[in-house]
Amino acid sequence: MELCELIHCLLALAVFVLLLLVVIAHVTAGMMDLRCDEKEKYFQTAAGLKEPFPSLSDPPSLALSVVVPSYNEESRLPAMMEEAMEYLENRRKTNPSFSYEVIIVDDGSKDKTTEVGLGYTKKYGDDKVRVLTLVRNRGKGGAVRMGTLRTRGHLILMADADGATKFADLAKVEAGLHNISPKLEYMAISCGSRAHLEKEAVAQRSLFRTFLMYGFHFLVWFFCVKGIKDTQCGFKLFTREAALRTFSSLHVERWAFDVELLYIAQCFKIPIAEVAVNWTEIEGSKLVPFWSWLQMGKDLIFIRLRYITGAWSARKFYTELKQSVKGQTQTFGFSKKTSLSQGIHPQLLLDFR
Image (cartoon, rainbow, N blue to C red; front, side):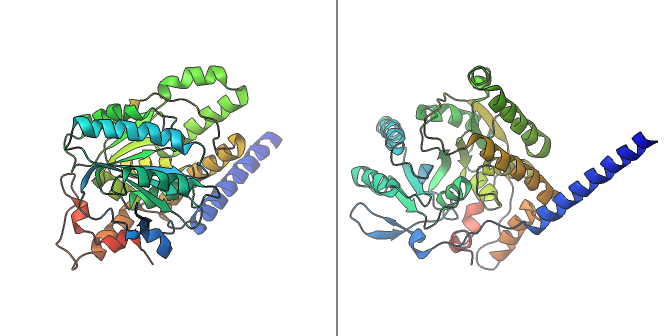
């Protein structure tokens, strides 16, 4: 009898905790703050002048945009940029029709990240390298989103400032994208993956860190994203249409933003490829093992609960965005073959007030 009462008490407690989590998740839910400071609407040219950034809603004018979120990266950014620019310049020489830009997003850094970035603007020109300096720290997800909303490329690559992924593996990720989406105007995402390095990582990590890693993978699979082994690799390639649809619905600004981004993609049935890349751990990571994993675990649970309760809805937000431009431009559809960016007013994505 006592055992039955104990089980009933535990079940009641579990239900209470679950309901409490649902209420907290729903009440604290909110859209990402898209308001930007006046300074964030402009980039500095090689001549030191200010020019306005374009918008993701504009028609693409380049083949590739590379977005590099950077927070206090003055020491690690140069090595990554040297490798990236060498690859991109060589590709341009062998294929004159190839055009690109790199947008370095200084996420409210306290060091000289912006100055380092502007050094590359002066070296290669502001058509190839631009720096977006955020007035306040938004987190990696917020920085990637703000940079993506200002891109000009048919394809948009998210690449970490530490250079952990070999930049030449862009060719592999690009091939993976073309395998699932032969035309650039279609929607598709190709994710660099370190899943093939997992056994080696387990051998080198402590038992506790290995437990955290597997625990996080389980939470990702259970609550959010199915079929993707490595959601956190900072080397992801988007078609412009896929970037528009996913980033316009993103809520999470911190480390777990990758998971929500892929969750949104799967909600919209956007095809996703996972491609093995060469990856090396670089010293200077901003992740604090225990607390960062704990924060991401909480975010994963809240992401799922907020979508289940309707506090967040990717489709609802995207429908509202669609309706908000009716009357301003021609009516447009939302099939894989439709160019969404042709019908959205530039300021709708760059300056929500």
